[in-house]
Length: 382
Ligand SMILES: Cc1cc2nc3c(=O)[nH]c(=O)nc-3n(C[C@H](O)[C@H](O)[C@H](O)COP(=O)(O)OP(=O)(O)OC[C@H]3O[C@@H](n4cnc5c(N)ncnc54)[C@H](O)[C@@H]3O)c2cc1C
Image (tube, rainbow, N blue to C red):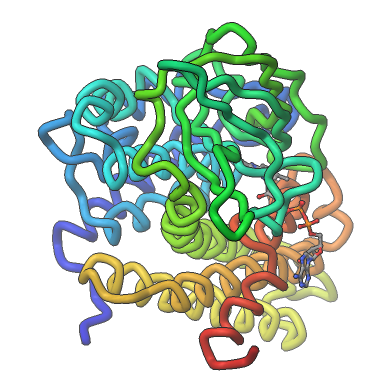
């Protein structure tokens, strides 16, 4: 067991840190205020290969390990978790095509995703199907060589950006012999007639993320747009969720680290009673707790992703990493806010943005309660 990064991994982390601080962090406050997705940063990422890290070389990707990808993810989230999470959704779609796409789908879609020309989106959630993914009601009915899709999705990330590929849609395609719904993944390209993109949701945080309602009204796509086997959509979504939970482990760790960065610097500069507040034990102990929370989140994420790279079972570890990192992000940001005093409530201090953004990490990619269900079931609690 080796907990040190090798030279190449350190270089990946350092380069991602530099890029993220100079570009993503520099735009984060403006983006939170205006809600505008930063296409200029996406284009720079495309030139540097960040839009393609896990994609195989034959499709124009960087063929990096998942471990390398989460080193980047942590640094991007340390700069801005709203940006990192939009990027993470794109990576999940690359991975879905890599794992389940036909040869034609891989050749058609992976190069345009890898180059960043197109951005990926994934639509599972509906008004009455959030944690209960099996409750999906959007339906695709086969009509000759086409699927005819009707239904509505909510809270969908990236589908509304200018360079969206379209959406990988989870929808009911039939019922099995026990009467249970069969759910499949179907790609609905942007611009398909009957695919209506709603207005952006007004959110409490993560403002630069493009999050919308999507409507499908007699929307027709070719049968070849089915991804993988018919009826296997939920299994594919769970596969995506496992990678997503590792990503959220890295994103939560990045937020934990950012809270430490901003709060330590502030506590060393802010003087009260003639001393930097970092010298008061109450403040120093909060910083110590925040540092421990960050390291704990990072190590659990590294363990989960190492198991994934080794092809070993990692569902529970991914869920544990997501649970711990997201809860620690909320705790660290809360303590960081406390250390900033009244200044933390002012928009010019980045801890205020972290405060607006952190909470949603305990909801996306499986709520805290759903994570605990997964972990306790793996222990045998039924
Ligand atoms: C900004 C943003 C971006 C998003 N992007 C996407 C996206 O790109 N694609 C997509 O498909 N979805 C997306 N989502 C949706 C997100 O994945 C869901 O919000 C999440 O899965 C939770 O579902 P819900 O909001 O319906 O909450 P619910 O499932 O209604 O949960 C409400 C509460 O009930 C609890 N609960 C539910 N079931 C149980 C149970 N069995 N036992 C105990 N407690 C339970 C939950 O833990 C939670 O506390 C996004 C959401 C947001 C806010």
